[in-house]
Image 1 (cartoon, helix red, strand yellow):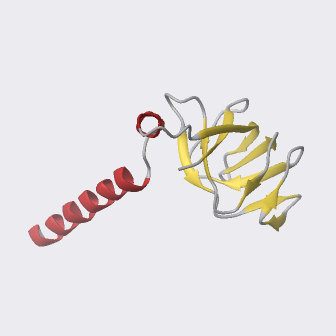
Image 2 (cartoon, helix red, strand yellow; image 1 turned 120 degrees about the horizontal axis):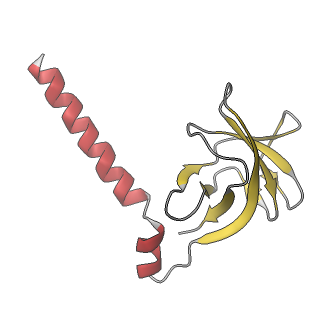
Length: 118
């Protein structure tokens, strides 16, 4: 049982290190001279039963992009692994579109949505 606990601790430390390495904070990005955040839309609705956020876009977004939802102090960050428009999978969406994205986090309607660039 002790070896299992040790293994879990090692895995947790590796995951924490990778999060730091591959997900720099906005402040760290600013320190490196990278602007990092572009406002691309607003949360219209959060569907809690299926953990999907509906976003009204003011700029384009692609599958594979990294987004932040919320203010800089409390934003959640995630990679867009899939998105839908009218229940159809799409790989890109443009300004004026209303999209749905699966998320693991609860988000509030009205929250700003940013595209993060590295």
